[in-house]
Image 1 (cartoon, helix red, strand yellow):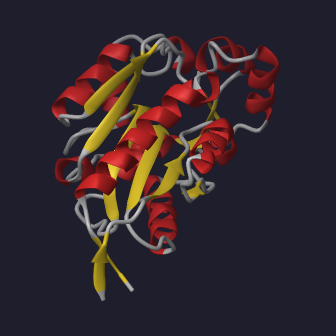
Image 2 (spheres, rainbow, N blue to C red; image 1 turned 180 degrees about the horizontal axis):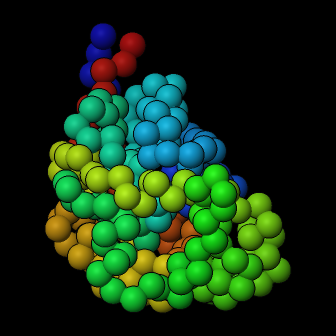
Amino acid sequence: MTDVTVQPNIVLVHGAWADGSCWSAVIERLQAGGYTVTAPQFPESSLAADVARLRQVLERQDGPVIVAGHSYGGQIMTALGTNAPNVAGLAYIAAFGLDEGESIGALLSTGPPTPALAHLDIDAHGFAWLPAGDFVEHFAAGTDPVKARVMHAVQQPLAASALQDVMGVPAWRSRPCWYLVATDDQAIPPDAERQFAARMSATTFEVPAGHLAMVSHPDEVAHVIGTAAKTVQAEIKWSGR
């Protein structure tokens, strides 16, 4: 075995009311940069199920990994805790970066509902859906309305119980982090995003985008993730054959 410097793989974690295809434009840009990218589908049936899916995908990676998460996807990757041996860095894209003992629901309850989340529709099975108006006008603000309506049609509902799950020791405590603040976000308050970034000592960028920055501003999102990957590549050695 010889220690060699290698380019990290990239795993992209979608959030609630979305799926892996929301990363399509970012994937194209990262692949053009030579990165191996995986953007799996998450069940969103519980936080535990989502973390298990992420671990399954991480097990398939050959070498170090940058994990990038959007929105609730930040909750998933944060919940990896200290047990993520091949994760070399975390990139938060307008994402929740909770600390130990916090939950998304408790955090959101500290202020009035954001426009994108003001009218969650909880069905008989305990899953939360976004109404069409809130999705197109607020959740997907800044994106092509035609594309936004398509994304609404394929939205993946989130188990409402996931909003009450309390975070354990967060993965960001033991990993270098990058954070992209979406300054026009109508789902997560931009100031909350800045607070997440500050307390994890993340290298922070800002973009004048709504919540779905990876759809409306894929160049900027790919730049943040690529910066994380290049930084990690310059700093670590990975044992390879």
